[in-house]
Length: 206
Length: 203
Image (tube, rainbow over all chains, first blue to last red; front, side, top):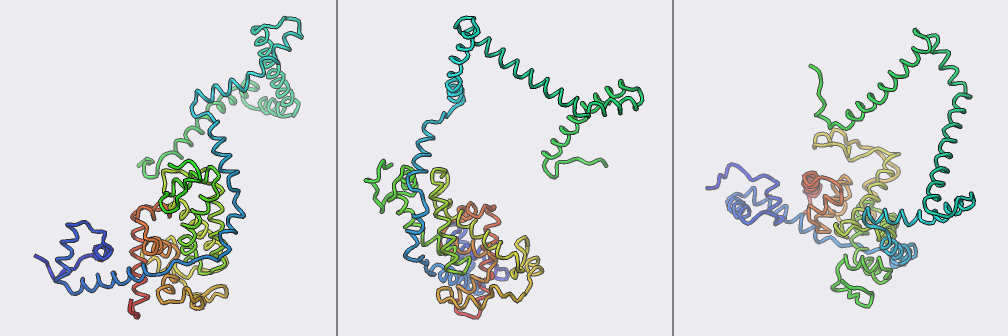
């Protein structure tokens, strides 16, 4: 039985006019609309508006539009090349590792040549040893240079002077450095957790 | 799936297959995509910006961006949604940039209720663009086109996509990058405003 004193929601009437209600919903809504002049009028208004909108024309751009677009498009070149390029790119981790080994392989003859030049003979072990020794020497050299630059910059001297003024002298500076070494990463970790926590999950002390 | 431009049958080939052909360098495929979408894309933009020359520039930029990035097309999405999304983003950006030196007359876009919209609506005299100028356009001069032009850009966009381009709600949500419920609300409010604006006409 339809209650004629209440009306269907506007949204339902819109959906009825739009034809998006399910079969059963539509049957119920139609039963009400047939007996309710107000809802029937509303459905009619929606239907008229939708029909008017649907009848609006599609506009056509100027005749030169297509050529203007195509003159700015690099047909074939970027798209075809990109597809071809992607075809050669590794698609798995193992593929990338193989590609990495392949890229580094040319270094082996170079290391072998260095090994040969240093009179130790051309063999894989010697070449690898020389490559490692060269790498270690380079890293150590960088560390020594960085430390020298740090000491020479005056910051070290300032730290020592400041440390001597602290309670406990240079030993106090060491303690302070240890406290900082723990506190800085800990606060960074706490901040990261706080930022990652969704709004509403954060707990507050009561 | 076709493997060459010789198999390009414009009447039956899908958008997805055209994109694949375009990725292989088929100019015919680009032209076919252009032919399919130039009117819907241009119409959407034209109804949004209400200026034919500007609409052509934005539509051109849309196609250039889509075609020059065709290798990045994700087949998980409809091509139509992708191109409409780019058109929409470019157009909304343009409208927002244009709004900067003036004041929004349609209420804040951040308003979440009709009361908020009314509270944030300001009537201003603008030398740049006013509703009367819209009437000067023959193409957009009908009462219903003028009414569409008076809607907030978000409502206008949703109404055009739903009722003129006949897109499903889900596609519109994807294009506008909004939740489905928000899109339905925009369309509902847009329809209500249109009916209010057109209440003295036969529509």
